[in-house]
Image (tube, rainbow over the protein chains, first blue to last red):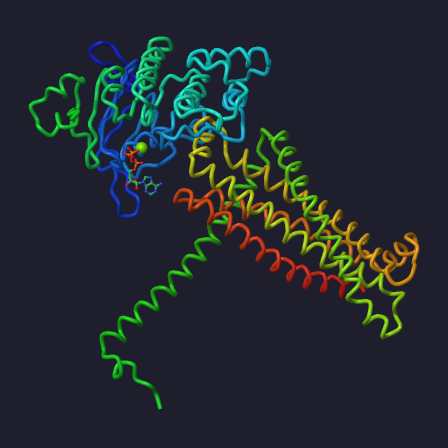
Length: 259
Length: 280
Ligand SMILES: Nc1ncnc2c1ncn2[C@@H]1O[C@H](COP(=O)(O)OP(=O)(O)OP(=O)(O)O)[C@@H](O)[C@H]1O
Ligand SMILES: [Mg+2]
């Protein structure tokens, strides 16, 4: 009975489920209070872009979602389950459903591209047939347009290629949620746009829900369904790209100034 | 007469100096205790993951192979010179007592009991320990360890158990290899002043050795290997502060494992002494 009520609560007006729900989340490192009171939701199939100054705690926030960092207090539910209450097995299962793109790619630099992609696959799926595994690897590389790098080492790739391989490594597990930590930072405008459209393509093709952290307004404009601005430990503003950009509030629109 | 600091430097200075001194002293103690606590927790985690499937055989073999192969030449050269020099140095003393024929026996006992295991372990602490510390450290700061964790792999299992097992079992093997090469060096040194056939040399060398020498010496090498592995992994796994931290991790991996080797050696010598008293 209670369960049913919860389900009704979680349905939005247009029948979307909430996949990530964060309430009163707090996290500090020693005396440095980074997240003070975070409240936000991500709906199914939605791309949420988070803007915020450098060092404000954006990476910390999404690391909490995959259990890499444990919050001090507050509630953090993914697929309606509290992260803090999960056993390590449950957490592992969840992690296969939540893809995480690291700010610095985090490709395993002692492994080739192929081994990098194989790594999550061999450990999580029960597939052992090498033909199927190869097929999945090629599919993931095709998605990011880098099939010819399959036997290269990460050190032989350019920054943009590494970003895309990182994306492929996450995609290979077909996650339901993807958390992108600055996917376009440090790339030229052309490559940035390619990655942004890739994010859209993935959303469309695999019906994923995502949180995208970005300073890149173009990327935000292309990929976002909704945007949040993180400032001093709280979500200070929320809205669609154009709403925030044309906001009357000086403070909000200052994030969108390009000159 | 007592010196009164307060009178000489004024009240304030004396008090401040005292406070500072006390604080730093406690900080150091706290740091060491923290370190010991962290290492014990890490060791505990290691054992928990060790017996939990799935087992990472491929990675274990790869690590063992790399450890063996990378240290083989260095240990070979060092062990050869060690055997040679030890024999050359001991010869005049032995000759003085007219005990030259005991030279192979004396050298073999010192190599097998003490010098072989300790020197090999120290070389491994330098070569393997720094390697593991730096590798895991850079994996930590470039978030590769986090990436493993979020892809549903336990990094302690995949990275740490394999490396610690590899050092635990490879170092005893390397010690055997090192002992053998030292014997060769010693044989050549003996032959520099006269002639003794190889079978005779080996006979004399092994005659002097007892199980009481061999068994404790072998057992302690497993502990050396374990200490090198677990300490280096610990330092690397928890390294922080970017690239600077990687250097620090590698450095303290070597320093602390070397220290641990001497401490284990000391304990091992004491224990085998007690064991000897009881067995006779
Ligand atoms: N493991 C940690 N230990 C201590 N402090 C940390 C840790 N991780 C992050 N912090 C602190 O938390 C704050 C936020 O860091 P975070 O990496 O989330 O910033 P960010 O918003 O992602 O910045 P950027 O846009 O530069 O990536 C920083 O002040 C940082 O010093
Ligand atoms: Mg960040």
